[in-house]
Length: 100
Image (cartoon, rainbow, N blue to C red; front, side):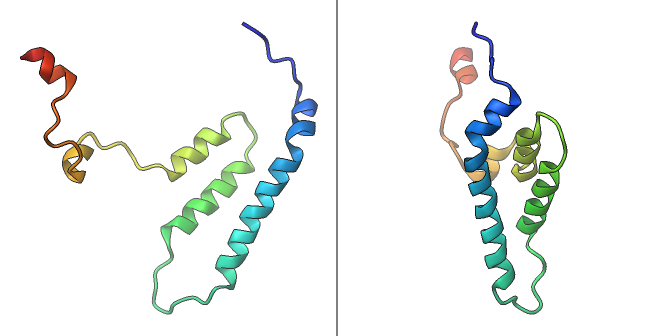
């Protein structure tokens, strides 16, 4: 199995401009939200809270930031999601087919 021989500086050299562009894109999106007129009486949108949490997670050192941010934007697993959403109600599972 080949070893990853690139060091942090090599990765930064390769990815810096792309990372910079993505950060600027996020900043521009947040600027557009801040400039837009607010509707009176509305509760804060929870998506903005998720964005703030994700930005805070980016500031934490460590190799697992992508996983942390994915979890911030993910719903908790619900074992009954198929029934609640009506997905594949008529579908037979592999376990049910084997049991027959």
